[in-house]
Length: 214
Image (tube, rainbow, N blue to C red; front, side, top):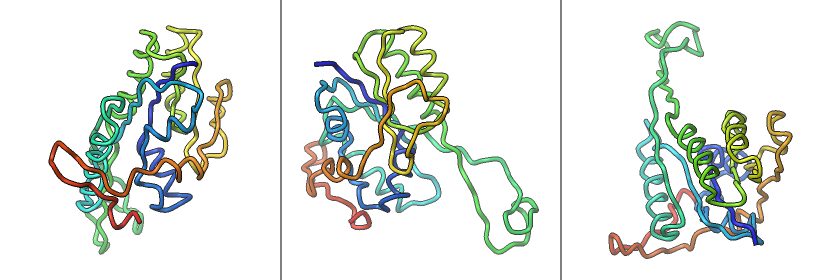
């Protein structure tokens, strides 16, 4: 039996699920998902990377609730790393092409995710260098991870790297063609849902799936 360490690009997985299944599978047990994706391997670590939503208080509340539920349910096998969002520089208005101080009625502020991709890439390389697992499983379709995988292979050429493509990504980017890959199917998502009710001993309370995710 081989050992596997998984690295999950939280937003890439989130948007993949949303594009194909709306909110149906957001209540996802990511450790169970990895076990189902690699049923013949021993899962030694699951590292989940995300950033807290900005500008949408209700969505941020649901996200925090979900992350705390994962911590309560999955225990030490799961490591959650939370980055942050930085407001993007002013860009032309999509309506009139002027800057955001124009007179159009709808003002839009956008944000860019910071640190999460870098943290994932660094951990992936560091874990491979110290021989944490035989297999590196990257759950993402983001081609920006290609340099990190090259660095990983440079420090540990024998490391087996596999891409698990989130829904909506039928094949890997051409920068990943030399890696093993497969698509995460709906069956794996459906069978990897968290229980409807989870007791969180940390706060002595029950945690439930958000109503908007039903």
